[in-house]
Image 1: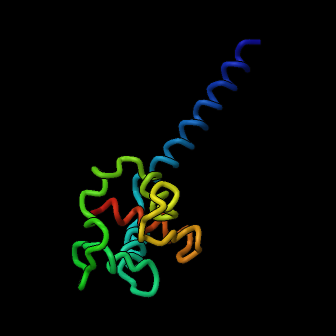
Image 2 (image 1 turned 45 degrees about the vertical axis):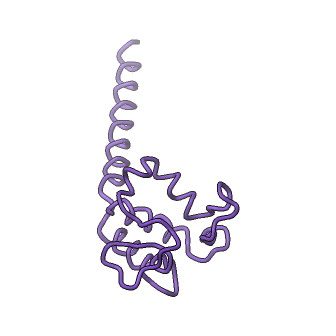
Length: 122
């Protein structure tokens, strides 16, 4: 009677472990295309256009209305906080000049995620 219960627990634990390894691997190894797309959108004058207001390493003709985008991991240890700011900064700072990229659907949700991944490389 005890063997099937232990076997079931073993199977569940193995499946949970395998799923967690898969999820962690996906999160840790953001593929290069994600980061590259984030950079492309951030530098694109017709899409994210982060360069119009922010200094970004490697960017040409940056603006100076917003803070320089450096040390982003240190400044935003919580990725979700950074994403929320890009999605709609006006929820925390109504007077902000930065447009609410997500709320106004200026760029896609995927592009916002990719920009966050790119910002974490700065």
